[in-house]
Amino acid sequence: MKRRDFLKHTALGAAGISMLGMPFSAEAARDGIKLTILHTNDQHSRIDPFPDDGRKYGGMGGMARRATLIKSIRQQEPNVLLLDSGDIWQGTPYFNFFEGELEYKLMTQMGYDAATLGNHDFDIGLEGLQKQLPLAGFPFLTANYDFSNTILKGRFQPYKVFEKQGVRIGVFGLGIELDGLVSKNMYGETLYLDPVEKAREMVQVLWEQEKCHLVVCLSHLGYSYDNEKIDDRKLATQVSGIDLILGGHTHTFMDKPEVLRHENGHETMINQVGWSGLFLGRIDVTFSRKSKRRTDTRTAVLAVDNPVLTS
Amino acid sequence: MKRPYLKYISGLVLALSLVACQRPLQPSANLEETDVAVNQTIAADPAVEALVAPYRKEVTVKMSEVVGTAPVALGKGDYESPLGNFVVDLQLAQSEPIYGKPIDLSITTEGGLRVPLPQGNITTGHIFELMPFENEMVVLTLSGKAVQQLFDDAAARKIIYIGNATYTVANGKAQDIKIKGQPFDPNKSYTLLTSDYLAGGGDKLDMLKNPLKYEKLGLLLRDAIHQQIQQLTAAGKQVTAPAGKRVTVIP
Image: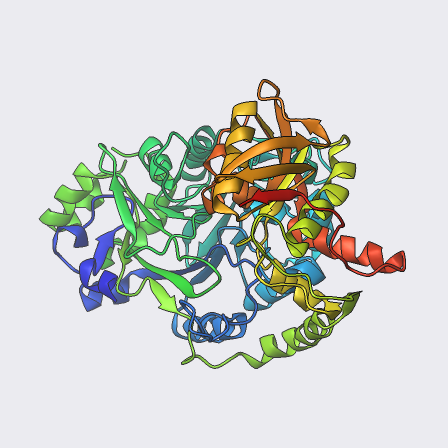
């Protein structure tokens, strides 16, 4: 694929070594802790592959194949996170007939670690969501929907911290404005809060309180709009401190992940993998301890540093 | 930040870590393969297949479920058609109870209805073929000017099916427009029921794009069709085109 020739390596988060033309040595990779982030967005109830009838992407996708792929990656990689950026539901008769139960069951079976809510995840209303949530063996993370005045009060967390070999990964979720996109009788008294403000709050909490080493945003805002509407690119520009935005909503097939750089040197990478599970997104991140000799001081460094806020 | 350990780090890394943020663990992404194709080369996972199998079977069964019957096929045509009139009328029948008040007009287009409804048994699968998209019903409030443009467009392009109205086409122009039996008043605003797809400019219906008001009903067009046919069957009725001529074309 084109994208592979383009950007073989890049740094996440800060201006990195590899960005400046010094690729990882095999040794560094061996010494570092490797995290493999796998992600999907806008699955749209696509359980079975697209019919192979000459349409674009015909014959591609399918959750049973994705499961095989994920299993084989888990066998090869020590630390895997499997994430989804929303719109799990709507698009095939499986959803119309079973109201999302199969989608949640399959994602649970595949071992999803977290997801966020897309607009179509409100398509059977808050009652429908409430009914199916017990089938989801993974949390839905949402920092900017307030369910306090609904039957789903207390059912969602804004973020979750995953720990892999001492590396702390903070993941939070952001949803799109529902008004005009979802009928009011479906989302009821769910409040949409400013995603930029909430993201800044999350960044603060995840870096300073939770001492995370990587901050990931599951976003259903959409990749890019020509108008004023908030999107992943605007979010990346307006909020410093997010390392990775895994996007959705706009069904964008990206040639390569986009990296946006802040004045202070912090970089935010954005990726999105189209829709319908035709592709599985994959970002491998290696956490370098910089030198072997520092391994034993690592704990101390972790404890003392305020990891993110840039210098 | 503790400084002493920095001396162990090579000069280059040190310089970088000072210009950038100072993290104890520096993340660095490898982007050699960031989208893995899920394609035919990957075998299906047996556990997933086993979980899906009964659902898939039920989908197949449900798609072949007979919802109603039609004595003759309902097809498409210019200006108005058995299928078009059936759909715009059922849109009103299914939406008005949700909206809570009468709606002035209802429209769909020739291209929006993918296939005719066949003679004989109508299955859920047929309804999915007729309306495969997740189009949702919306109520637009339009200015008289926009409504005039809509009728002009309907007269010129022949692909717009309109419910609750009659008009005459002369020289490609709409004349003698009546809405719910009343003459059209260009100084009034009207409510119009359609799908979110058409309301968003689908089929180049630009006059719908900036309505005075836009209200979603939370009802899918496909579900509206399904419910209508179910209700007809429950009432012992067949699926037939509504009676009456709506568009008179003066050659």
